[in-house]
Length: 107
Image 1 (cartoon, helix red, strand yellow):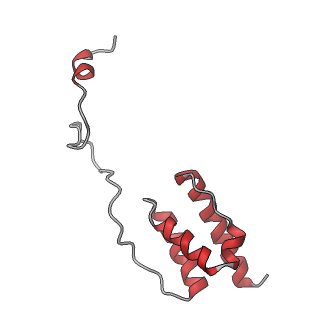
Image 2: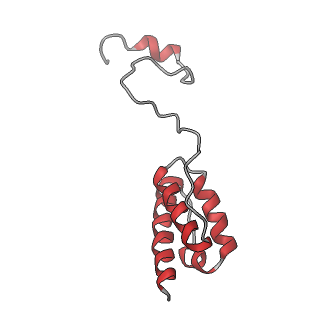
């Protein structure tokens, strides 16, 4: 294995762990190093994940394997809000039976 293959294998292994843990996807890290089409498809899937670390790994892998410059992340936000806002989000459904059941204390 060349030094480039070692780097690609290391990044592919990190992608394997992140995709398996966060998305339930299983990839073949070794085949990814040897097959450019398979690698491109895995990178496409990785970029669809709402995880910045996965996107960073995909960018690094693409830079080494395909010689492309790293991308900036232009993905939509994951919908996670910062700050402490006790009001429900507009997307969150409010169940009236649950909302009226707990007032001031748990039963």
